[in-house]
Image (cartoon, rainbow over all chains, first blue to last red; front, side, top):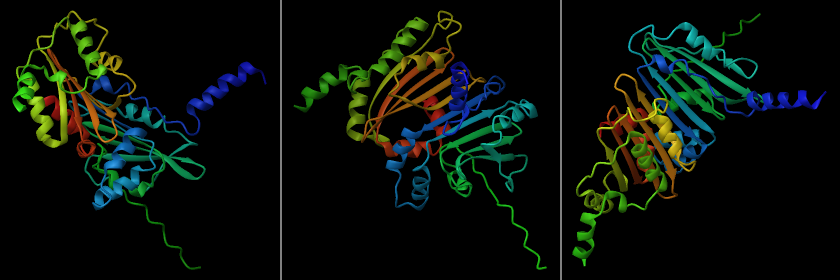
Length: 181
Length: 161
């Protein structure tokens, strides 16, 4: 294989491959929103927060343990003036960036809030969760949470309400009981 | 002795009390040059800063403040938005934390953080149509952690002040 072919392939692999932080493109939504909130907690900021979270307070101790291994938490929230300001195509464009094989949409997740649709996508590397994206779509608000680093989806509810992450109630889909033969 | 310290402080601008950070000045200079304006003089800001350093309200150890009024935004290059202006002025040492843009109200709020070990500095730049504010606060990180619980409110809180 020629060097000229190897080089772009390597660049593409590095850009989209394993161990890289996903940069979700949400540029089309910002001009439609009346308010945009962008929260960036990179590794350095998370370590700082971790240093000063109390290990004695139960809530803070949980959050401290949870963020210790994370590389970043990024929250982007769009508020719209009226319903229908963003289209299903806008949502699809986000989903399209969370494609297999690295990303998969986990099932058995539902929001209990009326009119709110929550989807959770996980990135797996070497059979371990290496990242997570929550897409929370309400009629007049759209929030995308990106967590970079190892996280158990069950712990996501513990992060809800902190760092700008909306409260997400997750329920695992119960496995059907095996019927005796 | 106390009087000897306090009296000169009354005449100091607030920015002189906190150890000078070049990025605060860079943002201020950038606003001044792009909007053809000068910061508004706030009387007794030095005294207020001195009191803050003693009383440490909400874990704040000191601040620098620059307020701009009647911005001539027609003088600013049309393609240069406030967020680009701030982003270009701050160095890599500052980590972007919160950015709020309200198209409805024409407001921008940028909050950057800088780790100083036992303390943290926040650089807050807000823009609202014809006014802008640049604030640098040195505070205890526990206060920041508390604020991070609700980063959206944090952005709005700074803007409302």
